[in-house]
Amino acid sequence: MPHKISIIKIVEDTIVDGPGFRSSVYSAGCAHKCCECHNKSTWDINSGIFTTVDEIFKKLVEADLNITFTGGDPLFQIESFTYLARLIKEKTDKTIWCYTGYKFEQIIASDKLFAILPYIDVLVDGKFERELAQTDLLFRGSSNQRLIDEIGRASCRERVYVLV
Image 1: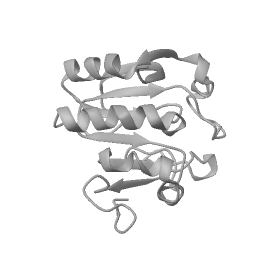
Image 2 (image 1 turned 180 degrees about the vertical axis):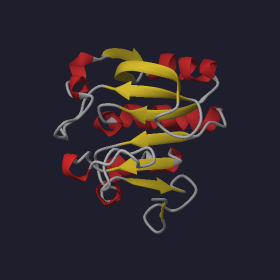
Image 3 (image 1 turned 90 degrees about the horizontal axis):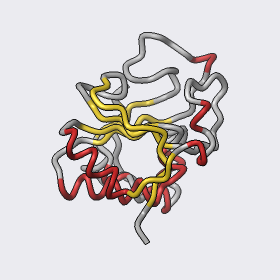
């Protein structure tokens, strides 16, 4: 059976979900339910359209842009997003950014969640926290969220680079 992902939409040529023009895959499903989330409609996995990973991969390759996984929370559908990320890394030279409400420490403590990290270039971790919201943060909404680099190029459980 082909891997399927429930997605809300794919936005091409966006500049808000990482550096440069990117294709952002907005996933459905999120258990974090951050207060004042700007994507509450993505919390229910059934709010998206179930699409095969191969169909999404084809659209992303055609767009010829770097990629961001966002949502919702892509890690809510970890197996399918791991498969998609692996395809992207094995067949293209695109970078992948991933936004998640999980903290990096939670991800590396879980073998299931950890599986995606070798394919992610930059992880933006942590729930949006309204009381820590700042409008001048680079690619983040609240100051508790971190941009974590070098994930795919390092042994993630041993070394990580927090950019900001």
